Amino acid sequence: MSSTTDCIDQKDSHQLLINQHNCKISISSLSLSSFRNYGSVRIETSAQPVVITGANGAGKTNILEAISLLSVGRGLRRAKLAEISNVAAGENWAISSNVNGRHGHVKIGTGISNEGIEDSDKRLVKIDGKTTRWQSELSKHISLIWLTPQMEQLFIEGASAGRKFLDRLVFSFDPEHAARVNEYDYHMRERNKLLQYGRADASWLDTLEQKMAACAAAIATARLSTCEHINHTIAASPLTFPKGWLNATGFVEDLLKSGSSAVEAENSLKIALESARNYDAASGRTTNGTHRSELRVTHIEKSMPAESCSTGEQKALILSIILAQARSGAIWHGIIPIILLDEVVSHLDATRRLELFEEICDIGAQTWMTGTDIDLFAGLKEKAQFFKVENGKVFKA
Ligand SMILES: Nc1ncnc2c1ncn2[C@@H]1O[C@H](COP(=O)(O)OP(=O)(O)O)[C@@H](O)[C@H]1O
Ligand SMILES: [Mg+2]
Image (cartoon, rainbow, N blue to C red; front, side, top):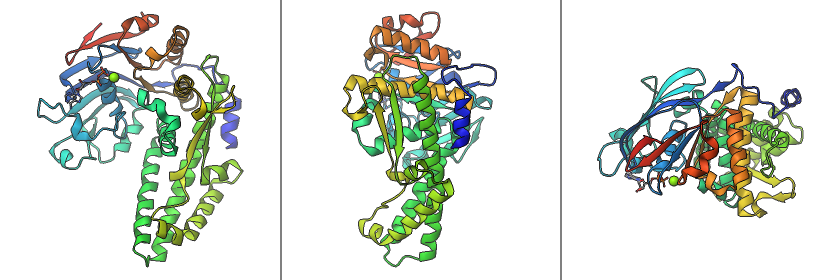
């Protein structure tokens, strides 16, 4: 941890130097085919913020969902893949895009094939025309953060929602994190299965627990580092948004915070897993590990847990966390991510709205924003590109 702290001490968190060393991720073209209410549509964009307006149900969120599917996972709606194909067209959905990514220009394509429909969890991913087996390859090229109205329930939805939110924040800049979380889950499921057999092979259990513990130490370390970066950025921020303080807690995270090294925390988890075998076999689940960790957020000025704050305060806290993570990306990773903000602007008063616009322009992120009322985006005139969505078509506004 000390190296991270040294690094923080040397930086003025709000002094974002957008220079040639910062890699700004942006989409230069996005083509959708048979995607939700779109038959075939292509949007060309510069690296500036993008505003998409249109009536309710016009297809604004669908565009953001398409962009979210350029990163690992099931996208911002967590939809079943077969649901996405346009119901009238009877064809499989596909997205193709040109992206200025972490390693320069890249073509990213994704969609389902007929095999994909049978296996509802699999979508095809092509990077520069080559099909890749691992979705996690996407994280090497793209860095994305999003906020949707559904996520505003985050603080009252329980541990798993907070943990997933934090993990998404982590892997917006740490390409290995998604793969580590998947690997951890895989070994945990194998261990659970083995324990269910009754007379499990002890040496095989040892191996699985060792692998779980090694992944867990890396997962917890990455979560703590992300929280630390965000906390620093929020503390240094001049924005009037409520300031949140993020704390990842759990078996491994708590050990690391109390001074254990990653190796010590890994060993402690391994011992805990071994000693809980009988209990875990009886309960059918794993008692300790990073799959049970929580994200706790405190409203600093009020010393109040986020879940006890008003709905408006919770929304503002989440938005400020998203903005801080984007800024942190530039400060600590040299990456300016794409930000997707779905229907966020309409909930903000005029002052906050202007602050938001200033902040995204200052960070320099290609931020895609949606809303029904174009007037609310007047503060972005000349600074953003405007599109209007109507009847499954996208027009320059
Ligand atoms: N698979 C699909 N095929 C055709 N239309 C769809 C599909 N899934 C969703 N839609 C339509 O997309 C529209 C919603 O788009 P959305 O992007 O959520 O709108 P908004 O502009 O309000 O964000 C709805 O009219 C819905 O019926
Ligand atoms: Mg919408």
